[in-house]
Image (cartoon, rainbow, N blue to C red):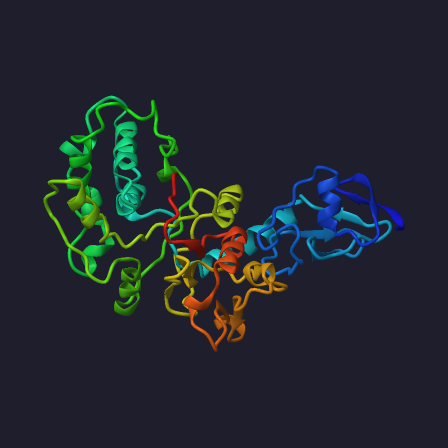
Length: 358
């Protein structure tokens, strides 16, 4: 295959015909951020985060699809390039109606991982939930005992009926720790203070959108204000609407926002209402408000023999990922679901029982 030489950031690189500028940059150890790109999947150029400048033609091109040409001189890190990438990320965030962290955790003075505690209890992993509490206590007293329950006041569930009894659940667990610690420190515990990280906000929700959050709760929940046992703790935790993001620790969009020091846009574009879809056979959850329409999930299963697969429906600004119009979301098979979750960069596709250990 024909070889040629190009320059990226004044570094001369020998490349092969048919390679992309992104490929060439990686050969030279030059980092170009991507969002809609995944190795092994045909590039699509939808996010425009990987833009570079062709210095000879003085135009901007997406490095993930633009092929190398002999004598190219590419600017991959100049001020104009960085500014364009920041605009691309800001535009994606402007219609990203989702929250990186649940408000119960954001307002907690200690940053306790309340969503993870709830998920562990719902899954019946009582010892793991208690060990998480033990690690958060750090050998001292649980801060919740003397706290004013900011988490309960912030709970989104109260806009529908009554907030989750978070404080009482945590106090019960702290008083019923396993006698013999399973770990010195729970592997699910993290010192990471999420309150110092970039945080996307969902903005205002109308009454119909509020009810979408109930889809992750059982049809009938048994509520307990006072918690007297693990059964009551798990039943009350089941009323949690999971308004955090399961991908908060690995969301590529969040990482890019932090890389470029971008603040969440104050006004969010509302192209479509917030909708949650749950595949009750595989546990696949799709939240359209988190989707950036990168198409990775569609391309990842484009050649799959497992049908049906996800696809785009509608056109323009109101286009969205969906199951084909002739089937139900429950019909998406497990293998397709797994592949889609693996490539989703924002957590718009996730599994219901995934624990977020951040």
